[in-house]
Image 1 (cartoon, rainbow, N blue to C red):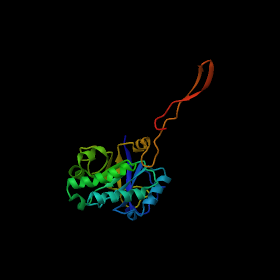
Image 2: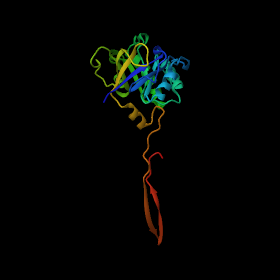
Image 3: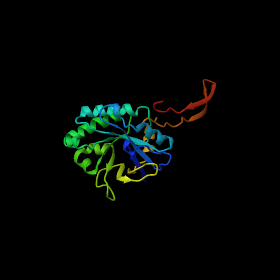
Image 4: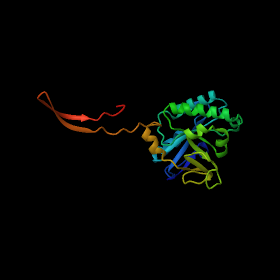
Length: 235
């Protein structure tokens, strides 16, 4: 099963969400180390998706040069997205040459600091990178354990052998309601169902309704009648 989506930021300007037809959208929430660096179109784009029934996720663009910076970026991201619900993961966008030039060990430490902080706060978190950068700069355990959003254009499928949930396949797409080019994505995971089922990204975990049984018991000649409720874990 595949779902066709888009990702947007301030660079798409004012979007007429009532005209946009897409299975999902990943919205830039912001960048850098402070919540003041939120994308100026984030709130409007989030509201537009929700008002028009478009499942959405978010991403935070990184400029971190060490793990301490990455933790500050995670805290800023958490502040910006607080109180909102997302049906798709929250991604860490790592693509700046100043970061990649630090080498695999340091880049992986930066990524790990951000994703672990976000995960501990109750989010389904992932990593956005190009196909080549994923292989070159991200440790294997990161690429295995977290949602991967891989960018690779002009190919019939990503030139990437690891697991991935979303493929950003073009940066020159055209979508009604958006002026100019927009990134096009394909998701191979039913993230809305999975995220809601485990109660992440602002959602509460679905719990089955307790079952009831009517019983009659006689103890020491006294008859008792009533219902028994099946005990649910964590209830």
